[in-house]
Image (cartoon, rainbow, N blue to C red; front, side, top):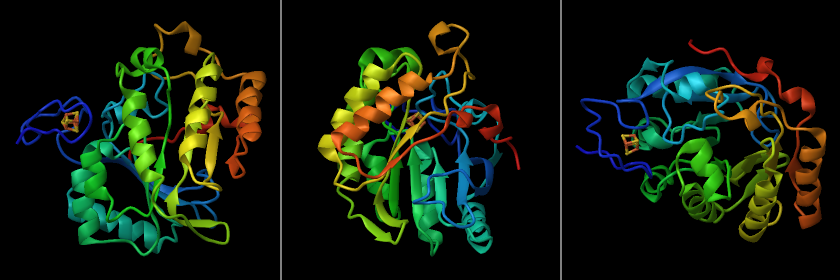
Length: 283
Ligand code: SF4
């Protein structure tokens, strides 16, 4: 069957060969209790993060590029993945954190129909997700956690090859934002949390993203402004990406978010932009 699951709609026959997302079936590069996710989803023992191989976005600066380019990962069945969810839950995970599974949404929905964990299921997405993938996942996902990466078509084209990133991501985020938000104290049980990675030289784009988010997100939704950009990935041809974000750039973005009235903001210190925060792959 021709795959049209993600916005690329490349039509690959995934029974036989990988599509543009880089994977044929379902692969897991790593799973573990991840202590560095944001406090609403990571409050006691860590988020039960599961990193899937492949990606339909493939940013040139990807911090997990070995995984997104499907160079790492073990093929797993949906039953085996359900066992991974159980294992993480038994280890005390605060949530199941599905990292970049947009291109395997059908397999994830199948897995979650086999076993729905008793802790929140977080769908941690690059934001480049189709409505069809969301339809499949919606019955099982408790917390949508999309990135909103680029506003400008020029930037998304340059860094991902996809000119329609904002068109796709803004529609997805507007839909995700309709999910009712529920908290248990400081723990997010249901709803949406949005992330934006500040990139070097791109603060004007960040401000446009904040304007969009302000218009679409309900009051009190957590917003994470990430400063952890570290030069890595396939950036030899992108000299502007070969440095970290400066304090001045980051403060400009955070200051603008505060001026717009974002009341539940998560920020990062400059020490977050270190290779030590990038996981080792394989399990
Ligand atoms: S999920 Fe992969 S195979 Fe399916 S349309 Fe997207 S890139 Fe192609």
